[in-house]
Length: 208
Length: 208
Figure 1 (cartoon, rainbow over the protein chains, first blue to last red):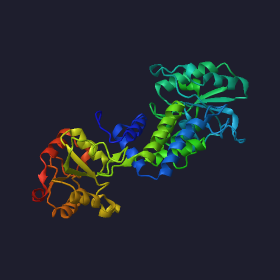
Figure 2 (figure 1 turned 90 degrees about the horizontal axis):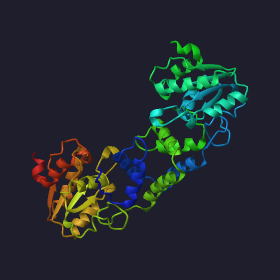
Figure 3 (figure 1 turned 120 degrees about the vertical axis):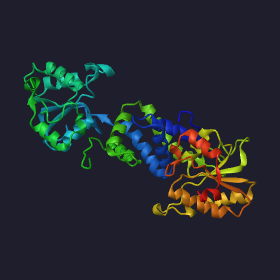
Figure 4 (figure 1 turned 135 degrees about the horizontal axis):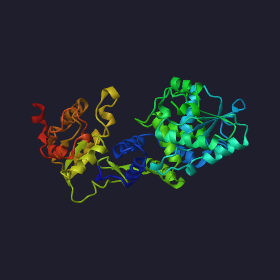
């Protein structure tokens, strides 16, 4: 497909753009664009503008760094959430996965990734300082480290534990009902719900 | 994922739009949108506009109904193509597949689909009348029926054969080097190239 000749430069442009997306090959990109060419102009304009608008207008919550339409996200702004419990997650997909379990009523802190030297991601690239600041300045009773149970997740958990252990907060981690090596977002809701209810003190999890 | 709570209405809109595409589920849609949120604003604007521009500005060639940037596509407007041979295909992906073999120097006719009563596609939904008009009015020596070797493709081949057999043209079909049941666009270039070189008279292909 590298030498493919497109009958239209406009078609080729759109296919090239789709093929930049992760997991979308050139054949799939062509199928998607040809599908869109058959849709109503108004629908395709809505599609295109929804993407641009998402990119230009979506903000990050000033408290937890979750994706948000406003300065403060709709979780941090709920009056019935417990601000003294902070659940630290890698990304917003994990926030959505935990919210779906309906087992957690505290707030979140979205790191924006995990420490991964192979991918060039160090502590300075993540929202770690802002987490420490939240713990330092707020009435935080507990920090739940809810990162994926991979080597990078364990590394990041341990890094955060060292940074937070001198504050007067409980540091817990998810019960290992989640299989080791699993990506958090693919865990079923029951397992994930149980593992957040049965969360362990981080220090006791080290000896297991 | 049906009860998923999105932290942002803008995010939800963009995910909903992506999830309308064929073969894109909601988890994939979310991944794609989150990927785009990390790209430069300018790149996302180029992406969105390339799709809208493709939909609003791409035309169909007035001769062969291939996708085109102008009124006449860049195949029909090539002076060194043989206008007396017309290769009838289902869609523009098949044009691209045959062009890639570099074995065909005639022109195309893009039907825009094949006869498929199950999908509610009848002869009137396809560019069949315009094909007959081309054969009637032009100096056409041969029509190659190059549809997929599926039941619907065979039905459409036979329908076209009946419409065209009284004109003074050779009606040929692709050599069945392509396995029966295969979608044309997935055939490898060598097989597809050979099958267009060794094309058969349609009547002789009926008895095989």
